[in-house]
Amino acid sequence: MADDWRGRSGPIAVLTGAGISTDSGIPDFRGPQGVWTKNPIAELTSTYQNYVADPQLRARSWLARRDNPAWTAEPNAGHRALVDLEGSGRSLRILTQNIDRLHQRAGSSERKVLELHGNMFGVVCVSCDARATMRETLDRVASGEPDPPCLTCGGILKSSTIMFGQPLDEKVIGEAAIYAQNCAIFLAVGTSLTVYPVAGLCEIAVDAGADLVIVNAEPTPFDGLATEVIRDPISEALPRLVSDLIARSEAG
Ligand code: ZN
Image 1 (cartoon, helix red, strand yellow):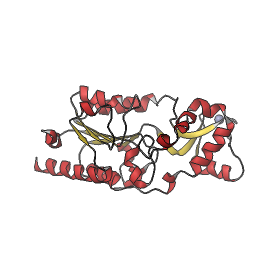
Image 2: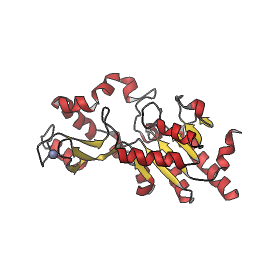
Image 3: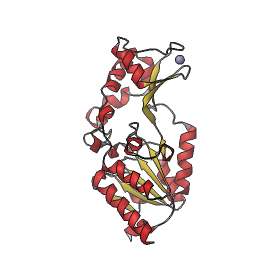
Image 4: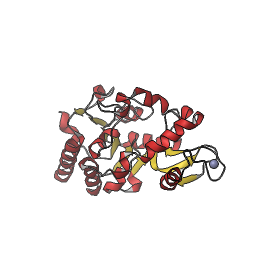
């Protein structure tokens, strides 16, 4: 039966993508209202190679970072459901593709959240790896530096997120793979599962015997591998799922 997995004990790995934050007012990338669906050029220009080659693109990027709706977004019922799941004592890791830190703001423990793509609250120099906060760097933009250089070496600064054309942090993706390999349930929430190596975490989990459960409005390439696919809105589906899981583990 499709819902047998709900009674399974053991660790849960939850992979989250942009879809869990859309109900917080942050647009996703590949959904019907997605940033890249509406403006495919934006995807091409947001590559690392173009960014380091083009000062005007960088100036536009700093303004886009300043105006990111994520600064004022609040966590939603989907984020809070995962806090409840952690609070139930279930072994849990959240592997997130999101850079908005809404999981932590909702109350998930820092150590339970692995940020696969970094986060938008820091900046890093592409030459010397010096770090600064996004807040102080955006203050420099506001004070008249359209493309603020690194204060240590004069190099190019970027958000401490992974851009297209940049490899993921090997340590982080390695850690994510270990969670995928050792979980009983792999829950993929609000992610199109089209970008590797993150999408490959589903395969790792299924190969190791986990039940794959997908909660996403649109079809994904992994739906055929899934024990269950849920199309309902995430901020409704996830609280329901989590209360089922908690109820079943208490009953069991
Ligand atoms: Zn530097």
